[in-house]
Amino acid sequence: SKAAHQEGGEKMEIYKIVPLSDNLWAIDEIGKTVMYVVNGTEKALLLDTGFGFVPLREVVRSLCGEKPVVVVNSHGHGDHNSGNNQFDVVHVGRFDEPASHAIVTPEDRVQFQQLFFEQFTAQGGSLPEWNPGPAPCVAVLCDGDRIDLGGYSFEVLECPGHSPGSIALFEETHRWLFTGDLLLTWEVWGQLEGSTALCVYQKSLERLAQYESRVDKVFPAHWVDPCGFPSYQLPPRILSLYAQGTARIVSGEDKGVPYPFGGKPMRCAFFEIGGMVYDPTRIGLA
Image: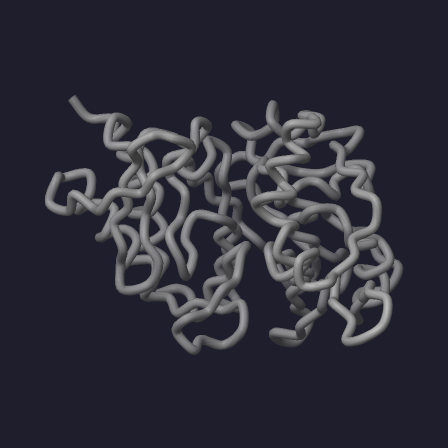
């Protein structure tokens, strides 16, 4: 259930598979990004493809057997879709479809090394050759679409914010909500060049907060846990914490603190769990 690379000494895991519930697993890739697998009676779901170091076809087959696999990206960023080229078809929110055809440039590779790979390699981990790329076919998902696996039925919720095409997946019967990078246990980047205006992000978070009484577990696409929560699982109240916290930024009640990013004067407001980095020039209100 795991792969490791290191010559001598304790081996560093490239990925680990963590059972979360019957027919639900997290795949944690170099401690930096998280994918999820759900095993239905008719189909399997793979949510996100990470950096692409994991042999995802083989991993999903080992967990779910030979059934068809529906591959979905929570959004179109490279730490969640670089393994798309392992599959013929990948689904993504309609407004992130353009980004899902992007080829990783040499400049991107340097940035990824610095942001994501440096710690792993500094601790002695050895990564295989990195060969990220898009799927031959990128299919779009729209608000209200359903993904039926047999025994599990996911509703697609369009939640523009962290990216224009970010989506969440809601499974009503099992009371699960998969939220991608929309909210985390540390500060979310809502200030990226491709992020929406913060008032748009706020509306998405307000929408997710309406699901708080309908879910028992919230599954984010990254995991660092300073709070002692069960692995890869956030409490439902994080939905209202993010909605209310971001509303305070938009209203001007919370001015945040300086958060230097890329040489630009961003700010960050911290919540009881996590927080929001934002561009004060991109609140989006007159």
